Length: 238
Ligand SMILES: Nc1ncnc2c1ncn2[C@@H]1O[C@H](COP(=O)(O)OP(=O)(O)OP(=O)(O)O)[C@@H](O)[C@H]1O
Image 1 (tube, rainbow, N blue to C red):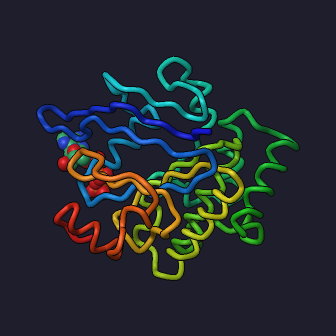
Image 2 (image 1 turned 135 degrees about the horizontal axis):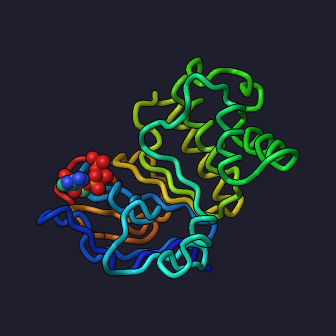
Image 3 (image 1 turned 60 degrees about the horizontal axis):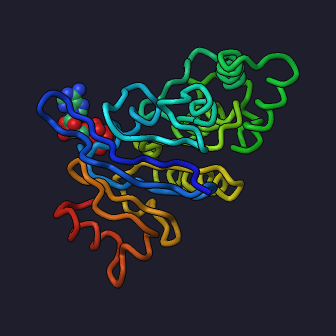
């Protein structure tokens, strides 16, 4: 089954083409890295997938729902962690999540149950009472991932979620995202760092608005390291 599918997406800012006939699909429950250097078009693609932008042509299907024909059903299956942190720093972890749960129409016992489950999933329950401002970068990211899970989406988009984190926090966030895929969430993980991609991960390489390669990272790397393969495909260092 397909968790996320993009077909024939084009997008331009004036004369600047940011996406050029972009097509790829991610199997349900797979971890897929979207690898591309700065300016490749990753954020533009995320803006189309979340319907912040609407593509004139092409098709996006989220957990079986066409984003154009059935936007509410499609977006209900989508969780998103944006590149910029979007927590209210003056609220506690719990309050940040409660507020978001309310936006999704969750309240009372259901909201509390979902919040506890999401905090447990990210190992953040003991920090529920701390203000977001007091958390380090890794814990803030974990809170944002927990928040993105509250409405139980089947597809989770993460836009360069490790930017600004130290190596230990980076490894830990990557690990949590893989664990979510193991629990059958479909994950699309944008990054410009080849060391965040595991050989068994699905991989889409985006460069200058185009998909250059798609497959497992192992297949795409062939007999090279992924870093060397990426460099030879794009002529850029990752
Ligand atoms: N509002 C805009 N107006 C004009 N050009 C834009 C605009 N936003 C992005 N671009 C251009 O479109 C291309 C794709 O940008 P995009 O932000 O999608 O790439 P990205 O892979 O997410 O890069 P980054 O990692 O730097 O965010 C780049 O060449 C960028 O300069």
